[in-house]
Length: 384
Ligand SMILES: Cc1cc2nc3c(=O)[nH]c(=O)nc-3n(C[C@H](O)[C@H](O)[C@H](O)COP(=O)(O)OP(=O)(O)OC[C@H]3O[C@@H](n4cnc5c(N)ncnc54)[C@H](O)[C@@H]3O)c2cc1C
Image (cartoon, rainbow, N blue to C red; front, side, top):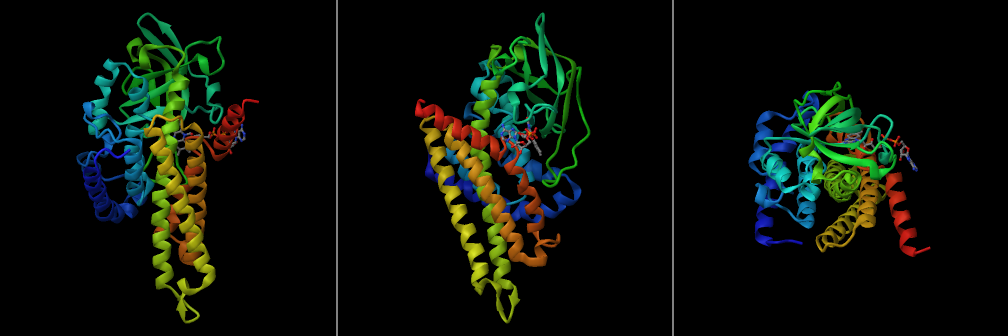
């Protein structure tokens, strides 16, 4: 749903200019230094990028899902590290609060998340619990007006930058399934909360992950999201449903950028006395990529509109995340191929993008987990 065409067009135009003029020229610097320059972070704050999806009453832009997807198409036409920095504030880091938080919890944290003063992280994965997230082992035991949390969370995006963590922990030791899990807001600086060393990753330099360690970490009971025990896993799944549409849109944007780079190279590079773009086998790679990106763009927009109409889009969100991330991998591979040897060395951006986009098929639910979600929903809906 688009609330106001004119306002959205202005936002998309200024974002597109910002990506082209400020982010693209800094891609190499971010990759080499593994950090986003503070002045760019300040500009991202000014543009309102940290609060895109936070409701307007808390200082955000309150984008609808369709608007968010259109914004993600633009923002993703550069290194995914930039999107990653604002991604947790708009997505998995804040949505638990937005969807299920109490009025007081929202008031306490959302305005600072929207302004970018605070960065949020989402801590579900553990060393022994990844795809099987409901088996998580982190415990939260009530002690007076606090909970005492113990456990380790793994690969947590933006943890080194985070001021608050949405942490899923087991409050009911007798319930080993999803019903025993609750969600908490844990503030940086809380005694018993510490971070592991920053992970050395395949790509997306400039975006950081690390372990989040909870050792006798005392969290006020007021920070139990929604004030209700046992619904934290449901909160996490609602957050991930929305996140999957966002990641699908990011895959579309970055694939469009890779294809644009590949087309430019194919038009410049000459072999056998002509542009390689004129060879039909190269044209096949360009055409297949174009068609797949178009398909992913259409399905992501369709699912976003359905979500805005309050439809249950669990199946569609998984279809989009699965198809768009796999598509993005294929486009990256073809774009390297079109660049030939130049695609394998770091002089061209495609070498970096090829590594960066590999992550999209893994996090927020691997391709295999999306397949399980889709097929299980189909079987359930068949009624047999
Ligand atoms: C850079 C990065 C950032 C991340 N950010 C976050 C974050 O911010 N917060 C967070 O909580 N987590 C985060 N994660 C964790 C991420 O979501 C998990 O890595 C992912 O869900 C997979 O879990 P796993 O690594 O334990 O793999 P596993 O679950 O061990 O899976 C290994 C393989 O087995 C397959 N598999 C597992 N179960 C099945 C099954 N039932 N059927 C078929 N195949 C199966 C998987 O598809 C995969 O191919 C991040 C990970 C990375 C690498």
